[in-house]
Amino acid sequence: QVQLVESGGGLVQPGGSLRLSCAASGSIFGINAMGWYRQAPGKERELVARITNSGSTTYADSVKVRFTISRDNAKNTVYLQMNSLKPEDTAVYYCNALNSHMYFLCAWGQGTQVTVSS
Image 1 (cartoon, rainbow, N blue to C red):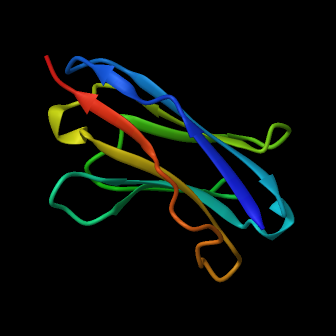
Image 2 (tube, rainbow, N blue to C red):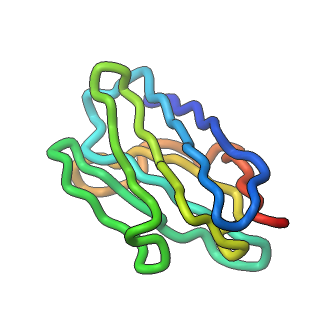
């Protein structure tokens, strides 16, 4: 099994930045990609950004240019650098790992709250 530990959320003013981290442990050999997802109140969970083992990235249109996903393979950690944050980015952010068939490897954790407000 794969275990994930998310960190880095918080309260930030519009235009500010935050960096989220997601550290993986356990059966990481089965991981083909890792991604960040978010769920705002009253909305469905959505993909924010995803990165494969080969470094290929995918972004939601709403975060392109502002957010950057990266990974440190030595630390088995994925980062989400979020710049120019907007109030509509407010959500609980979740990390998950995907196998070669792009199926999620983990149950959804508690996530980390990101609140963008003045």
